[in-house]
Amino acid sequence: MSKHHHHHDSEFSENDLSEVNSTFSEFITFLRDFVVILIIVFFIRSFIITPFQINGASMEASYHDKEFILVDKFSYLDFASDNNDSIKWSVGSTLLSIWKKIPIHVGDPVRGDVVVIKPHVDKNREHYIKRVIGLPGDIIKFENGTVQLQVAGSDTFVTLKEPYLMLSNSGHTYLPDYIESNQFLVPPNTYWVMGDNRQNSADSRQCFQNCFWVEVSAHFISRSNVVGRVLFNFWYFNIFSEGGLIRDGKFSWTHPPRFLSHPRTATYPELSDK
Image: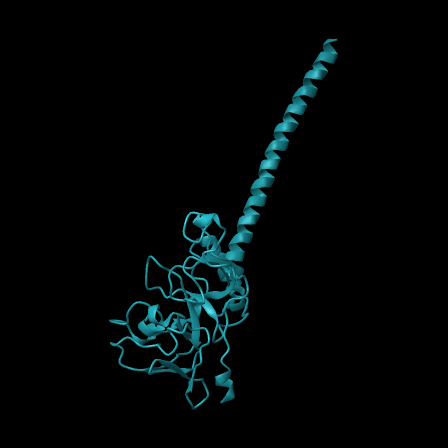
């Protein structure tokens, strides 16, 4: 009897231990999976795709204030330049310095692309959304509200048609009064960018805030400060505000979602004709 009782005891304690062990190993497995997921998310957000919310009206009517967008970083992946200054923590930068030794270059911004950039001019507002107009080597000229471009390697200026501009902005692209020159040569490895809402956009024309006390290069965005291009357009929907569910009890969007059908790229056939 006592032998049997003793045996029962040990069986009980073994079960007890194995349960504790299984819970502990489950926890370790969970932690491992969680860390793996974090690393995957970190890499996706650093190198492939990142969500943003638009703040402001500088891209009207192509993009609206408060809309959510997905930005494609992969298409501009370039480890030749220091293109990921967003990574501050040491593990990330160590991984990055290893990655940098692999010469990965997926592609560069194309004229007409809507991009997210970091001009480094405003502590409270790190990212801006603009459209790429001038590529390295282009000469951009502003005359009577129009934008004229002499493409790198060409010797004639062509007036851009810019179909993405609202009627109120078409023919109204002006430089600030304090800027002396009306034409600019885009330096190597930089871009000239502007918002589609030409009369209400801080962009290359005024160095994203103003060009006082800064050198000419402040007009241009360096390749390493182009974060990615806009890929996907969700929407802005708020049930508690105008455009939400409350108005007349009817379902309506502030701005309907456009997913992939938004003017995220533009072509300029007038340039290739010449």
